[in-house]
Length: 274
Image (cartoon, rainbow, N blue to C red; front, side):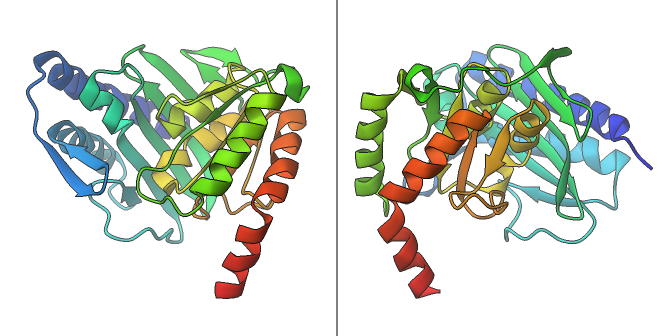
């Protein structure tokens, strides 16, 4: 039975290859930028980095499935082993030279997370985890914050770029947080936000309209660091459910309770439309 150490080493090799490409494009500042949709950027660096990742993984595990941001048509989790790949999480940051953009590589087997790697390229911070083997930052063990009082908590979030359906609720919720916690941060890359929870920089994180390649690696890293990850209903549908809460036990519970209050009508409407 695999302990996924080999897979993690392959992910490290793939991420390193992608990071070299990303850094070269960033240094040259000479890359094309296209739009997949409103505010949904894709650069030449995204495409080339993903190709490099797929090449490394494909050589070692040609039978495995791939779910990658720039090349996958459908968001479907097949049976067996599936790699979840975001070549640049934080593309908008990257195009502006803002230093939070990540390579995210996760491996799921039978719809359960087994290995995760998030490399924050600008800072060269590599977060990793293997199921039941703990979480690490550049090889050193990490754990979630012990600050579980929301009044002393720093919480991360993100603002969706193409789904503004909950924006009124979201802004009201944001206003409440500003009055009841220590602060809110928005780095612009969900995989990095999750890793900030895992290493104790954030006590919690919440966002909606995310894709599986945004959270497939970081979610496991949080869990292995002792944190909790759920959807907005407290269930396990956070990979494809597009609504995620992560945090230590106290702040996760706080966010879950408050989200249930501020988004209750939206949830009722969503259920009625199904």
